[in-house]
Length: 403
Image (tube, rainbow, N blue to C red; front, side):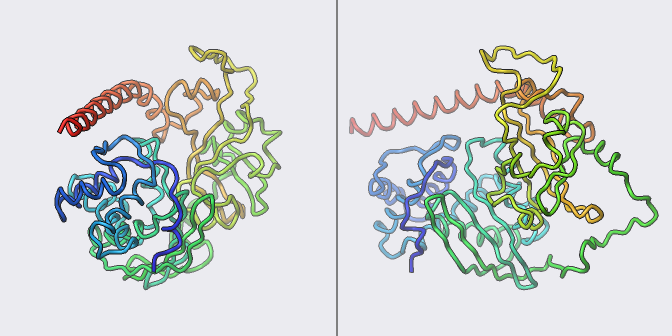
């Protein structure tokens, strides 16, 4: 029977590439006339989907309902599952699948990396409103996967994607059951049971035992640790901040930072879970993104001056930090190993961060400088391409009206 999610209206927008995949395979599997009929039934005749343009989420569900009416032998869940497989097949056919194939050595690794893959794709698709996938538990025969999204009605679309990824990239047959589905005004929370040959799974050994032993090395001092990670943030099981890297403490004023509750000072942007000790302990393989809650970042004796920013204050932009949560057994605390999320030099100007503050052993400096150099070129290219596609769409609509 159709799930409750299919009765709710989806919200937000999604990129045209997802719609383009449906268009391609309905035309291939059923013919161009069927696709035209589906578009008419969905209330969007003559539309041409542009990969980097966004469209309303509800169009996907409307297309699925229209496909049900047109084909008449499939229900809504079956069509949404088919749409999910279409997207994976489309990625493979047009060589968009490399990042999916390289996500992990096996299907288990892939499932743990889905959120990180989405974060990587966001660099080229900044308007993407991606869901969150969390492996809650696992065993030799599969796992429990939590799917959270601001969208509703896409449960079986996701199932189609997960099944097709397992088949195409890892030669694995997977059975997926919906154990629980909660739909609210804010989105959906779905619990899946995935049954498959979990060859990458190894039962946990001892608490904190990673299987790597470095007994010949002395323990590292905390002062050295914070020099290596100058934007690191450390908090204990009571969610109290007990340490911070020198650059972060200087930027955010350590007297306000140390001893404060981390959730009072920072809000969690990614993944889509509550910012709790339990969740951070469970999600150490997922990239986290947090935002400094203060309206204005204070930095004493700053020599930075805003340029071409109108009346904007030098440090009015909120600070975003991106990295990994890592449990440190000796401290019985979690260290957020992170770096500031900076797109270009203007972002540095607004937040009060200097190139000297950024690490030399990662790509922080290179990414900022590269972003500054290519951002305007990329924006111009995308605007030009979007303009051409929009003009082409108008010409098609005009020719159809003449006919």
